[in-house]
Image (cartoon, rainbow, N blue to C red; front, side):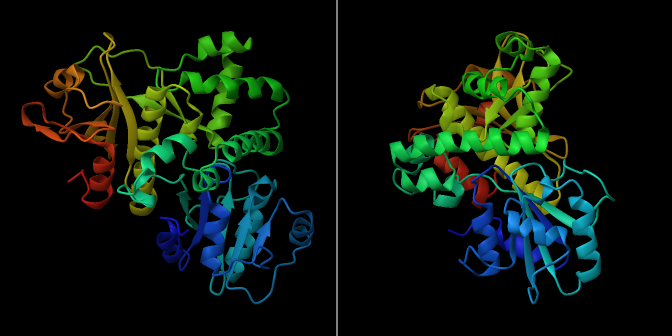
Length: 380
């Protein structure tokens, strides 16, 4: 399966290095092999830091000969990886392309050495979503909601395989990424945190309450969440503040990269929508260089709109999520006359498609919304 970022990465590799981050098992390695034009997992151009024999060769300064593209996977686990990559690129940039992949924020792990600023473009690979698999495909939403967007469980669509995959992914994040990258000592507490977080999706996250549940300090709980953000396990979004409204507290909302972990149907759908919108924002940022933000709107009276998309600090549109068709949310009619947000969308899992011009709003099926967002661009 070819991924949505492949043509953009292929183009950028002609001029600079490309760093590709994203969650574990989201498809980075398969994308890399597509760029190599090979399915051979033993291809000499694929260099994984997790492989001991490859690690020894790299530390000895040995690189595979006669390769036009080198793939460095998980090399950010090496303390001096930036100096190492910089040296190779500066010497061979005219004849060698370099792709660096990793299951963590590669723009964060800048351990040792000079900055690589100006030498690379950074991309974030997201799980499969409706825009990739085809929003009109029968059963696609149900399958995505049930098994998530990570390629292996989604494509297998098998309950037992899904549960085993979930268990193995969690173990690898804890044992490989958490320990090797962050040197967290109390892994059992972080494991408990991973079990708690799915129940906190969609509501403003109180780190104070979370620290009480875990029996750790506020600072420790906040640090652990930040680590999980860097490892692409969770992400948080900020409130959209407006001076003319009585703003709510500055608590952020938390979502999972794997929305299928949410047991509550409403929270899962909201996380599902959030992930589609974040993917869109990251795509525009990574391919066009625009500043994109995913936020939410909530006032002190607890009136809330699930999401607001900003481009270069200006609101483009807002999105409210409802699993059922229903009627227009009163929060949309309230905020539409009190904010500069030009358009409101209420998305659902039904078939209703209605334009309500007096509220600058539209009710429509989520698959229709996604199709228009990517193909017709709702921002124009």
